[in-house]
Image (cartoon, rainbow over all chains, first blue to last red; front, side, top):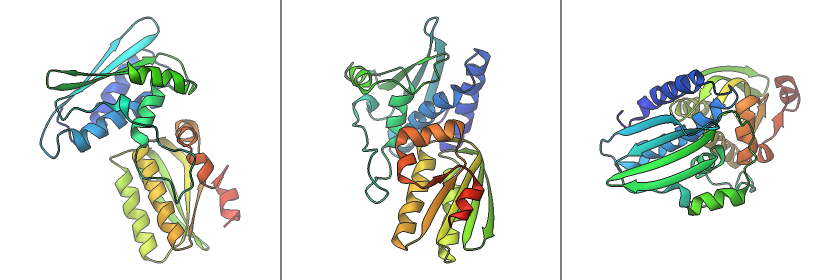
Amino acid sequence: MPAKMNNLGNFIQSLSRWLKQQGMASEQIPRVQLAVEEALVNIIRYAYEGQAGDIELRCGIADDQRFVIEILDSGVPFDVCTLPKPDIQCSIKERKIGGLGVFFIQRMVDELLYRREGDKNVLTMFISRNDGRFSRSSSNQDMHAGA
Amino acid sequence: MEIDVKKEGQAVIIALTGRMDAVSAPQFDKTVDDFIEQGETRILIDFKTLEYISSAGLQSILALAKRLELINGTVLLSDLNGAVKEVFEISGFSSIFPIYDNLDAATASI
């Protein structure tokens, strides 16, 4: 689908329908929606630098425990795994607007991988079927970020 | 997302329903901009029927809080639950905003 903000709803609805059909726990679905929305919005806003371009969303079953979602675009190379975490402790005045989207992607998925494949960015998210916790440690995330 | 607004005493109460995402957040920005231009400085946001929020929604709330801080106004939040509450918690927003369990408690504190 074209990388346009008015397609965001279509992407999220298709994804949610698929996750539901696959039996994902209902409280887990908004977390996946969040990770995917943030990734899509980054692509829509920045990847094509004002030019037209497409986004491809692929969903599949990785193994007994996990789903895999891949998001592909042909925009400028961008590795979300390497971005620093925002400071989430500071006050309203000090708190920066922005930077949270990538943080949510990193927090909502079990494993996040980025690769450049030809002229495409490929972001791969592994998500467990029923895990409803936000308990993944920061060291785990760092390990994936370096992968 | 649906936005319902009412004025109660000194405060404007904004009730959000549905999904606050990158598509719908600008609609919220427009609503609060209009109120601030009209001179309102106390804004209470009722999240009771909001099911989902992404970083775009949080950015709108933060931008509102920053604007109100400059004019000695305040923003209060009430009745966060489910996915919305979780997003506030993991982003650290729960600790920088005044959050009330329900609308009555928030209204009483204004």
